Image 1 (tube, rainbow, N blue to C red):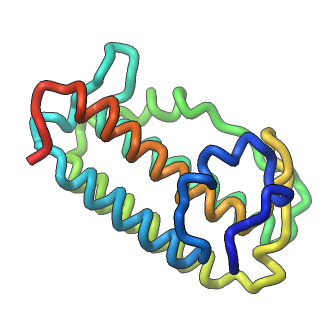
Image 2: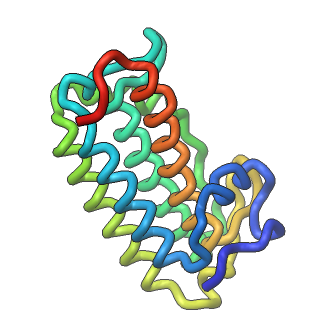
Length: 177
């Protein structure tokens, strides 16, 4: 299934979907997942708890946020594909990060969890039929198709991977390995 047309999602989601270069959802999920996992694994262990500002997430919290968000968006895609008429609740990403500080975890374990979640997401999207991918549901940010949610999952991970490169690695004292 090709990349979703803008009429399949609200403008709110465009910044994420526009980051995805692939036009097939299975390829997009695989490639973005591989890129994000490789980039997080390449970070020097001394930087795993680094924050580029006191009120910003650590590297581990950033990846934890990507994992949490992917779980939530994949769940929404499942609900919409199964034609559940109820609007899923929104979530507060900062509250989630606050309660998922990651200090007791190591980054390679979080990358493993990300890869497991992404493998589950790939299986989920591979299970959807063409008609299911075209189905839409309502979120707090507006209507979105199942297919568009898949591309948002990819773009959201790529967005935070870009934040990692720009804010955490370029401004921090210790470079990548």
